[in-house]
Length: 191
Image 1: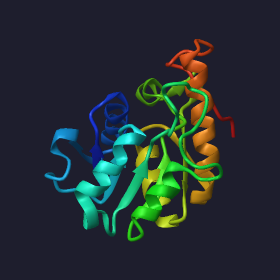
Image 2 (image 1 turned 60 degrees about the vertical axis):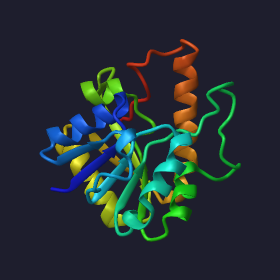
Image 3 (image 1 turned 90 degrees about the vertical axis):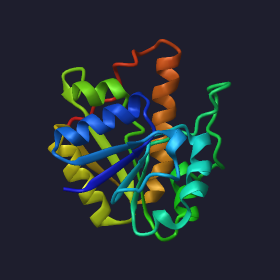
Image 4 (image 1 turned 90 degrees about the horizontal axis):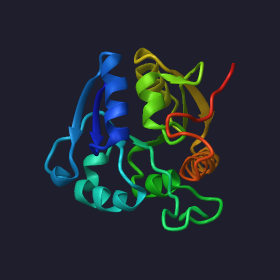
């Protein structure tokens, strides 16, 4: 089993941590006040707003080298809910990978809400975590941990697919913020 560090302590951090712990993984949390002071596990989950990522990357510097870094952010303009705040055609995950060239960055969990990770259901369907990244071993490690926790994992392709995943996350957040769907809902996949 992998050692996971989750940076953040909000609802997504707790939902992801609970899921991973259900699968028998070692999970530790790094509250934002302790960023830079706590040692990191083999897999680091950035469970915080996109705007906070830069500070975390700076605080840990080369401590991310050799680690799998899971970006769950949705770089949405939360003032207007009308756009993403990354350049067109790019993604938060691609920008993080550029800053962490010695790490394997994955995009995951951004198309699920905390409630669907906790209940492990989207309506009558099993929750599915979409995973994008360029490191097949890193994706397999995360997928195995997610599935051991009781939800499905699906390889969404290379890290370039993070752009599309962030667009799906943006759509889902916009629908929930506008009241069209509940924060306990989301998109379900049928295989």
